Image (cartoon, one colour):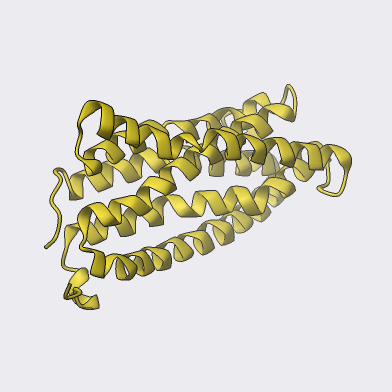
Length: 226
């Protein structure tokens, strides 16, 4: 097949759907990956080198590993059992997985009861991301010819890397500011650095539903580029 030139790829809505889908969500995963140990240390005093700190991280990623397996099964069920075309089946599955990260909204409030709650809820949010991400990659093959899959994947990788840098840098700045501000920075009953974490959890929680809506607006119906 003749591949689509790089610059021409940016003239298609399908390209921007994938770019924005990765940009709005990949940074969330890297925030959890980078900041989870610091969160358990800051909020509960369990360093990642302690037994309890390691147990919390292990539980978090065990949930991610097991639950995210559904990311490959659910769209297959929609396509093979319900007869949906692959793109629509994946988008429906992604909509379902986009609700999983909403669990992060309750991580900070329930963390006042036990540190195990944030570990479990962030694990569910992370599992939602992995299931979402698996289907995001597959949408490229649904929308583009095989000769262009690598190009679109690379473009999306750039968007994802940029997103990851911005959310981690921004979160660090916010945590420093909120810690210094103390009671002057508050959200949903939390103050200082606790409010800073709550702010980022809120952003992470709704990012997937926003991304899904953006992708659906850009590509409302299945249409493969030929």
